[in-house]
Length: 221
Length: 291
Image (tube, rainbow over all chains, first blue to last red; front, side):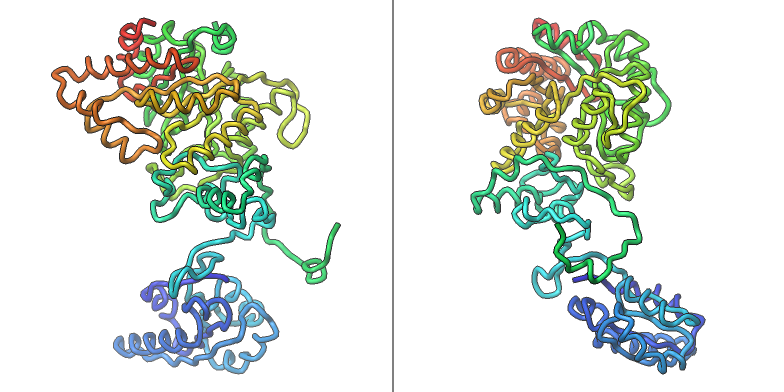
């Protein structure tokens, strides 16, 4: 899923300073699971904003709403009524979600409440780590199902750089050297021979990328 | 004699390393280079070592070439995409550079611009393959060059990898580097000759040229610092004690380095001396080692 975190409250307050009526819009997908932009977080943020503005003597009216998914135009049509009553929408979706709303509300400022961080999974409750960079050319079959593109600080594909100490990455001692994890897993699977294969240079996609649904799931030669 | 000829001649190779300053000042490194000229087969010039922004390797290599010294251009994949890497290789060739040491490079977070984008479009293996393609007269996507270089490419290996997995991975990558065209290897600094001997036994079948790395010790504190912070460097306690108890640090530092050089003569094909600011001691180390 996409992992995102709430922006600093001061930054959110500054974004809203010119508005007196807003809609805070949560998203029921990834950011609900990673507990940064779901229904509950909408409620808490709305409360905090109302209180802060009240203390400043500059009341704000806040409508709360959460869509099943902000990245799906079919759902966004459902908030057009609420949106017509406010001056701005504060989206608690990921960066894609914010822009999904933008494309449906052409005369309305849409502001981001979150910083979108990465594609990852939960290690344990409330702790997430990056597992995929959407590079468009998955090599997990060659690396024991552990991704060096997203989990090596240098995205190296032919083995580690040699900078690890005690199995930890030179760029951040919080992270294991992913190549050592790959080695351990391939050793268990009796597939160490895969490490000897020469990997090719990564191919950078041209952004923004597009993909048609019939293409996404079709079996290609 | 150029470095490639020295290597082909089968003599015991000696290279040293100099690091450009942060700024346009070149007097000190050129003075150091003149001092060791004639005593070494080539001089490496580092490429923004430790990810600290400095004067570039290519310009300094050119200055060395002008002074009759054969330089080894260190080239990392940290700061340049594949266009810039290839273009800089062509530029280096035009400026007289003949030897390239292909490195992955430290991560920017280790240096003085930690917010910089880590490029790593290619890795060290990909860079070696690219050098091979340029030598054949093509760029890495197969376009023909108008005038091709003929670089002598080398690479690095870290025999002191501190876990079994790290060591096995180093060996696998070393084989890939050889397959990708590396003609010589310079190693991370070595202080334990027994461990190094075991490493050399492991790679006997690789049939390549290995130059053992020697880092001159400044003090016991520096040794401890490296043990803690530099991947693959391990200074054994007796050597640290030796530096700690000596009355003449410079003399002891030279003696230790000379002992390592002598020990390596029976183990590998050469030495690569990293003096890190103590370049003026290199001739004394070589003399003490009888080279």
